[in-house]
Image 1 (tube, rainbow, N blue to C red):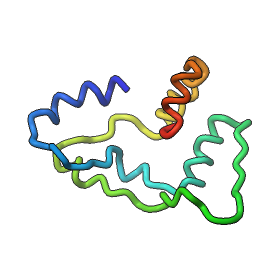
Image 2 (cartoon, rainbow, N blue to C red):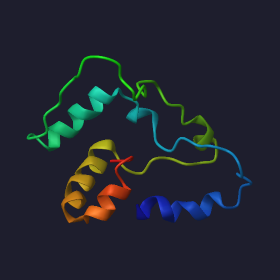
Image 3 (cartoon, helix red, strand yellow):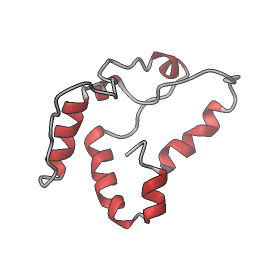
Image 4 (cartoon, helix red, strand yellow):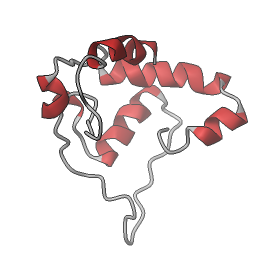
Length: 105
């Protein structure tokens, strides 16, 4: 988190009101199943179950990071490093923090 906050000052000099940005890197584009398998690599006890029926979360598509890249943003952490960081911090989070973060975890 501190990495992203420290970069914020760079972007404050631009007029960005009302503009949405995908923050990341093209190397991180993957399906939800691929992401789950990367997590499972670091958390072997993680079970992946592919359910049948309609997927209410249809976010299996390539995300464009071109807009933020034009402003000079480059990802400074690899996906695997981010997963390792989350694996280390999740057990330390309170129930309230986990509930607050559930849409991003």
